[in-house]
Length: 276
Ligand SMILES: [Zn+2]
Image (cartoon, rainbow, N blue to C red; front, top):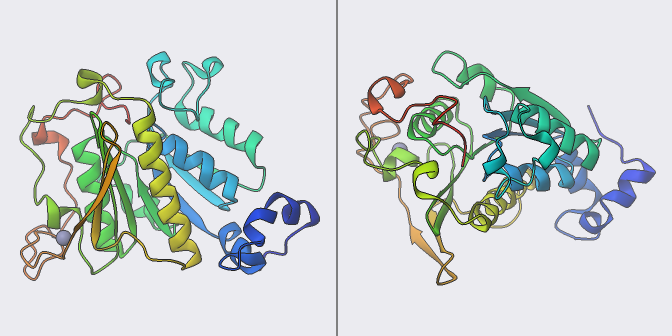
């Protein structure tokens, strides 16, 4: 369905329309686009706010958690009165107030090998804002199988990472073939996180998602962007598709989706699985 910009939309998106790389045509593309956010936490919050402000027409949000007071230090999608609400409800309310052009599609179920292909099928771009390995590997493998572009982001202590995985050109397993052993990587709750860090990384993910939707610029595909918040340094590390990758390599050994929580030990529960 072709979108025609209304008078109020022309005003709302005027600073996009003024850009020659976007224009009215680009803004229509954004309004017709769909982006799935995995997680409405530290990474998903800034990404959701800016993707909604930009006018992404359909914003899917996956999160089974409720808003906790300790989330608010880094998750500005949720506000103090939202504590106790499901994150997808809080997210939908904030976004409705920010931009009524955006249709939020909430998913409160945990992503599993059973449901993920059906969820991602309806979206142009997948943005991974999860903070646990079972979800990260599941989303990666599903995007490889479905041929969907995946915008990856992750944070640890004062360091963030982001990249884009384009179908056929490498994936998260090219970098890290298998999840770390149980207990090897502490969760966000155990180590703490500086609140602004996921904001920066989540907005880099949102930037890449918008560029993919518009088909402009040079994406992070082929590079891992590493951000050190303490030293305020950004650097890019070259990434290549790994021919020995277990899922996208020449002789894949992972040929179906795996629900890692069964043996990974990073439990995805209401107590331990909240998104960064
Ligand atoms: Zn791969």
